[in-house]
Image: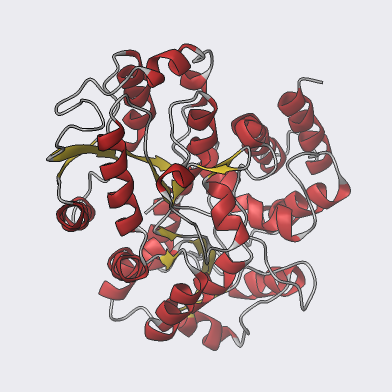
Length: 417
């Protein structure tokens, strides 16, 4: 699941620089097997994604096969490692061999749509009804919907029930309560709190709920609200409640620390639940990410992948791909996929039904309703801001700069000021 999903972490922004030639290539693509005119009989289409891990790969193959069968075509799935997807898309665009159906991590959509490589979905009568505003914006570029996500994800606070009970600590709801709880839960060999603060887009992804929930904004990083959010993380490290090693930990490392009992609380996503469930001695709970003040709703980032229909000269192939895309996004299949991958169905009513059936997903379902796409404010300029943010996190947590100084530098980097 994107954590940036894997949320998301799959940014190859540098490779997308200077890809204006993709526009011409994309409009002439589609020279692969079965390409032809609108009147050709289409018996198969191609699909590209980054679902290489099992059982995810097989589960998606089965879903694509079923939706292909409903559309009267065979779907030939190709999966590549996450870091290889965007480079492969660029190469395929240049050689006019883009797939008929393309999965993209949602923050990558705008950069690819900007090139002209994707087809607006309204051309095929696909009406994206019932989606939360944030979810729909993840697949939108300049007012046109180019991609739809069958499911999404976000992050929340996981906690060890036994540790909190023994320390007499309530589940923290506010920043103040979080600092107090983390202090009380810290002891030799164990930290109270853990996050992923590494120098990648994962670090930015984990920081966003704190930035956004405090009224901070990636469009203007040098504000008191942004500095206050980063100061919270600095305070947790300085007090010894959070390990300095968070500067290097991935979300997988944070999970491992939690399972091993070396941290009582962590920020992570629902894709960790299957592994947590395998340890019968681990009694864990999940709660919304703490907010600055009581009564606030946390604003978290959206993870997940969108499915798109690339441009090609074959209207018939595009139409079949759109049929499969619509099938992937129907309510029944959303529910099936969400159950398989521990994610949240993208349609609000389906998400509510899923939360009732799988209680551990209810926190994520509620958070998703108010969640925000990372590209919603800056669009194609998001990767540069994200780089500035994780650089600021590193600088502040190491003590090289104060949060305010680090974020001022991030703002200069993001805007070129």
